[in-house]
Amino acid sequence: MNKSAKDNKILKVFMIILTAGYIVFILSNSLKPATVSGANSQSIVDVINGFFKSLNLNIVLTNHIIRKTAHFAEFFLLGIITTSAFRVFTKTPCKNIFTILFIGLATAVSDETVQLFVDGRGSQVSDVLLDFSGVLAGTLIALLFYIVMARHKKKKEEKNC
Image (cartoon, rainbow, N blue to C red; front, side, top):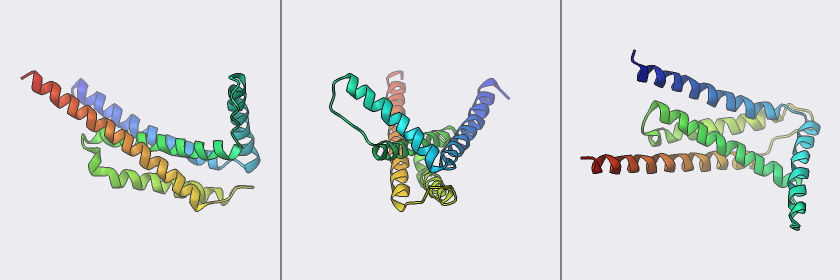
């Protein structure tokens, strides 16, 4: 096995571990009781609102806004990571978009299902939709990036001929 093939194999294993590890991270956040999760969110709210105050901006964010934004961002990153993992295995991840989106949706549904069994937490269909919209946005941004990069590479190769 040449160095390039070995490096590619290592990258594939890394991306599988990264994707699975990130899904575990998402689910582990849902295992936190409401009091712990709420306190974590509130500490972030306090930091952000303190930052706005230091800039003399009259902006005050609520715990609810931070939590919903965090849901979207967490799943946005999942979309990027999952798309990138598929990109390592195939140069055309667009062909796997339904699999990528299914992984994101399954993670969102699992995330909300886990919360049914955690003290003080609950499950909401609106959170599944918010999470999935994050996956969809992250996936589309990553695919757009890969399409632009492929076109740029193709143009560069055409100039070298």
